[in-house]
Length: 85
Image 1 (cartoon, rainbow, N blue to C red):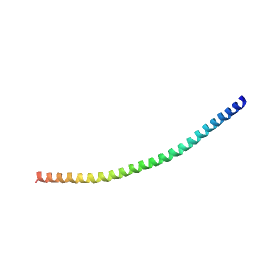
Image 2 (tube, helix red, strand yellow; image 1 turned 45 degrees about the horizontal axis):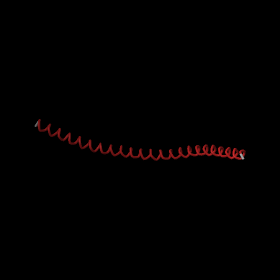
Image 3 (cartoon, rainbow, N blue to C red; image 1 turned 60 degrees about the vertical axis):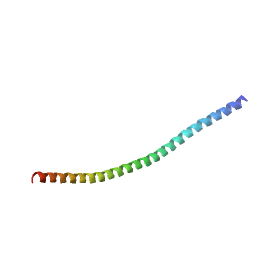
């Protein structure tokens, strides 16, 4: 009786060790693939948003600066012609 129990427990322990090793390897491979895909998607979205914002801000700033410079030059010419008339 004890012999069968010890054999059963040894097989059970071997199975648990095998299962834990298999699951750890499988989970590490699965997680590495999943994380690499997730990070690549996340980084591509982040970079596309960053690129969009940089293009948008450059266009916006160029328009804003051109309007601002135009107004500034207009006021400067107006004041200059008013003072030195």
